[in-house]
Length: 275
Image 1: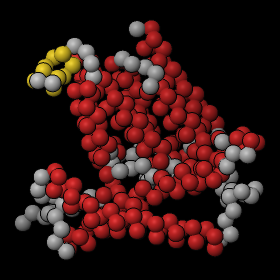
Image 2: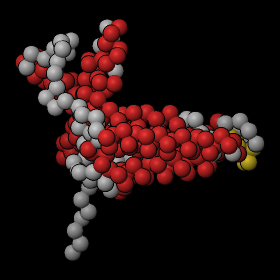
Image 3: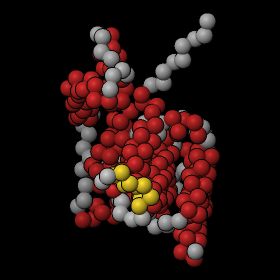
């Protein structure tokens, strides 16, 4: 008798905000260098615009995954929600982009430019979220907060709340898997009472999700209130001159990897410009 395949947790289908325990070059890097690498990659994605460019950028992404020693299967499984959004983006561009008409039925038409733009936008979205996921998977939330604050420290001179903004971003990322776990718990409770989220038409499935929103928001606000009370109990004050328990240390490996990735990003752009 075959065993029923165990369903993977919902949080495994969305990787942003999670930390993957491991020992790799990406895990050991300073969070500041990883943030800079991610920013460079994001900017590069919106500069080039050719098949060779995106092939090279995909290679850079796969190389980064290799350096992180995170199984590619884990990242692909964690991007299922993004893949659905990518498919919607691709299809939307098929029908709403002006250009050479390849197929038409009444007012519905598919253009050559729409197909090209759809696949480009979809690939950009996948690479963007995938690379950002590698950043969060290899960096602990506290280290990410310290890195963001360190990079934004020059803004403190103009009284910009760098620490508070960094802390809010870190907490928001950390709450993503927490909210997904809570959503899965509520869905299990609703299934135990006879609710069905997998059968029926698309509209029926959407209507079945509506009763989940109220308990989910109540749970999210309760967790946020508990976190605020815990921070107040520990006399947290973000406006003071706080010190770090583990100070950030920029090492030689961070400089080498940053220079290496800078070259990897410049080459595809330069190659794309020449062609």
